[in-house]
Image (tube, rainbow, N blue to C red):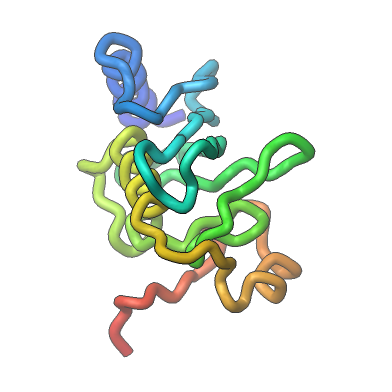
Length: 153
C-alpha cells in the first residue's frame, strides 16, 4: 500500500481508538489497511429505529485521493437497509462515494453521512432498478457509474 494511504489510515485509526466514534457507530474490525468494518445504527426515531447494519470499507492504494469502496455487508447474517439509495446487494448510490468524494472526508465522516441518510429516509423502499442492477453489478461498487439525482444533464 502506498505510504500516503497507510499514514492516513493509521492517523484515522488512532483517532477512532483514542476519541471513539460518534453515537451509533462502532468499529468492528480494522486488522489491516485493506478492509475495515463498522456497525451503524440510526439513533432516535426513524424508519430504521432499533436496526444496525454493517458497513465495509475497502481502501485503494491512492486513498484518500481516491474514495474507498463502501458498501453494506450482505450475507447469511447481515442485511442491507431497505432504502431508495441502497441496493439489496449492499451497494450504495451516494455522490460522496463517487463524484463528490473529497480527500478531507474520513471513514468516520462517511459513516456519519450514511447514518444521516438513513435517519432522513421517509419511506423504506429499494431503488427502482434494484433487480436489474443487482443481477449485473460488479463485486466492487466503485466499478459502477451511478447516476445521482442531482447530476446535471
